[in-house]
Every structure is written in structure tokens, then in C-alpha cells.
Image (tube, rainbow, N blue to C red; front, top):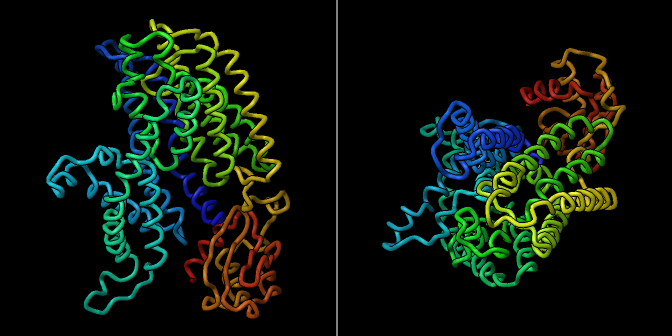
Amino acid sequence: MMKYLQKLGKSLMLPVACLPVCGILMGIGYALSPNAMQGGDITGFAAIVGFFLIKAGGALIDNMSWLFAIGVAFGMSDDNDGAAGLAGLVSWLMIINLLSSGVISTITGGEADVAFGKIQNQFIGILAGVIGSTCYNKFKSTKLPDALSFFSGKRCVAIITAVVSIVVAGVLFFVWPVVYSGLVALGSGIQGMGAIGSGIYAFLNRLLIPFGLHHALNSVFWFDAIGINDLGNFWGNTGVAGETGMYMAGFFPSMMFGLPAAALAVIHCSKPERKKTTAGIMGAAALCAFICGVTEPFEFAFMFLAPALYVVYAVLYGIFAGISVALGFRAGFSFSAGLTDLIFSSQLPLAQKVWLIIPLGIAAAVVFYAMFRFTITKFDLKTPGREDDDAGDDEMKAVLANNDFTKVAQIILEGLGGKANVSSLDNCVTRLRLEVKDYVAVDEAKIKSAGVAGVIRPSKNAVQVIVGTKVQFVADEMKKML
């Protein structure tokens, strides 16, 4: 199960890589065009440019479920084929359209449950990606009768995915409203618990992000589902001083300071040869969180690789949210808890003790960094840059004796006992990773004669061939042969 989650986490890196630039664009856009956030006319060259940048960033941020559906399906497929990505998109479109409010209203003859208005979320995107990749892996080689031969192989994957997605949508028709309503009821119960309640809310908000169900809680606290309307009252100056803003303020220390510090800890804990790559991912994610409160590039980079660490992350959010509210810090946002929103909201009448963001932020940075670094190293968690697939220095320096990749692949395949003996083929940074049917048929000497750096047998039916940084070229040639 853990290996499956880690593979899912790695498959999310492709769509997550699209998000940092969007967050930065939106942060610059809101700075140039504050009326896009606060309401009002957007006039003047700078404001129009800002509005354009906001929309450019929002094009992907607002459609993350699409990215996850395609990216997860592609990444979870056995051979990273585009047909799997198409299957993921097919599944997502099926589910969100069948469970849209309009379709549900027509089917039931009454008003659709509010839950179906929130069906386009990250969880559904990831679920669709898993469905698409599973169908692809299982049915990509299906052979149909001659009369239907056009739909054989990969062409039948999307059709099967559509049928499976209809069944899944039928299950969600009953399950989704129950789950959503339960979370709304939980949020209602937290109301009135003061600083402790705001801490519990922040904890649950982060904890539910992987499933896209945090929207249910947000509707209770930020909007007017049960009369709190924290966001609307703060910006409209219609709330009560000292109370309004308590369900938003607590996010600022963690998003602006805690998350970047946690990202730094991830970089420091990564393997030496992977520090630059990890710094690129984590640095961009930290910048997004600080400027405009976009946290998904950081969260989805590790939540499936190290789920236990994500729980620690959510707990820290809860603790600092509770402390922030208890100390009287009040600020609000119309997008998220980043620097841009903090600057704008600090000028509003209901903002209080905004200066506390400095000591609170420093404290959050120290605690987040310390907790992340301790937890990652103590329990050897596979955060970005620490995955088992990462190669050591020797492997990164490994050089093939023969640069004829077709010939190298052919010799390796012969050493594996031929293509009939190979069950699966994958590769990481430096290694071919294979599963064989008959381990006795593997001839290590033959494989090494291809000029590879080494052969590893981690289990009875697993074979890893250390090729070096040119492994992708060898893998591509071998896939053609298989």
C-alpha cells in the first residue's frame, strides 16, 4: 500500500510542476490590480496587466482537477503512455458531468444537494486518474474479435474507462452527499469554540485537502452556510471586531513562514546529489505560498510520499491558528493567506494586531523547520529528494561502455531470458527496474556484457540494471523490443 501511495505521489509531480508559476503570476497580478480582489473597476494599464496575469495563473490553479486526472493517469500507467492520460480525462469528464447539479436535479426531480456543486475537486481528479491508469494497465493489450478489431488494444481503454466511471459515479451519487453533509455538520459543531475551534478548523482544513473535501468546511466558516460568513463580513466591514477574521487569520503564519521553512527542511534532508532538483521544486512552492498563499505545489509534492508527515503538517497549522487567534491577530483574505492579501486586508477596519505576524511568523518558521527536519530524518520519510529511486554518486557517474542503445537493450533483454520472461519494465534516474517470470533464466554475466555498471536482484522476481544517467534511452529501446 505504501509503495502504491509513493508511486501516486510521484505521478502527482508532473501536474504539480505546473502550479508554482501560476501562483507567482497571480501574486504579481493582485499586486498590480487590487480591485480584482477587493471589488471595483479595473482601469489603467497596470491594473489591466495585473488582471491578465491573474487570469493566466487562474487558468491552471482553478482547474487543478483536470491536471491531476491526466497527470496521475499518465504517471501511474505501466509505460507512461499518453493513452492513459486520455483515459484519466475521460473518467474525470464522465464523473463530474454525471454528478453535476443540473443532471442530478433532472434525475431526482428536485433540487440537487449542495454537495454536487463541489464535485469538481482535486480528489475527483486523482480518483479519475487512478481509474484511467488502472483500466489502461489492465486492458491496453486486449484483443477483440475481427469485427471489432479497430477497438482492440489501447483504443478500447477509453471505452472501458467510461463504463467503469459510470459505475463509480453511481456509487458517489449516494456517498458524496453523506460525506459532505457530515463535514458541514462537524464545522457547525466547532462554531463557538473560540481560538480552539479555529485551530481545529485549520487542522481539518489541511487534512482534507488531499480529498478536496475542505470546501465543505470552508462553506461553513468563510461563507454564509450557517451565518458565520467570516470572509464576507471582514471585507464588507459588517462583522464584529475581535470575532470576524478568526477563521482566516490563523492561516497567515503557517502559509507565509511555516511552509517555506518546512520546504527548506525538505531541501536540507534531501540527498546531496538531489539537492539542486529538490531546491527548484521546494523553492518555487515556498515562494508561491509566501506571496499569495498557494500551498498545493508544496503539499501535493509530499502528501502521498510521506502521509505521516502531512498529518504533522496539518497539526502544526492547527496549533498556530489557535495561538494566532488567542493572541488577537486578525487579518483576512479574498484569495488565500499570502503577503498580497495580508497587505490589503491590514488596512481594513476589522484587522487587528497585524504586527503580530512578525513574531508569529518567526515562531512558525522555527517550529515547522524543526519538526519537519526531525520527523523526516528520524523516521526516514521519503520526501522529495529522498525516494528510494534516487541514485547515489557512483550511479550518477556510471557510464555505458557502449553508446549504441539499441544494442545495449538487446543484450540486456537476452540476459533477462528474452522478452517472454519480462513481466514489466520501468526506470528511475539511473536504473532499469524489471520484473521477470523465471528468475533462473536471468544471466547476470550476459547483462553485464552490455557494458552496464551492475545488476541488483532485490527479490526473487525483481531485477535492477544500473545503466547511469542515459537509462531513459536504453529503456525506450527496450520498450520497443517488448
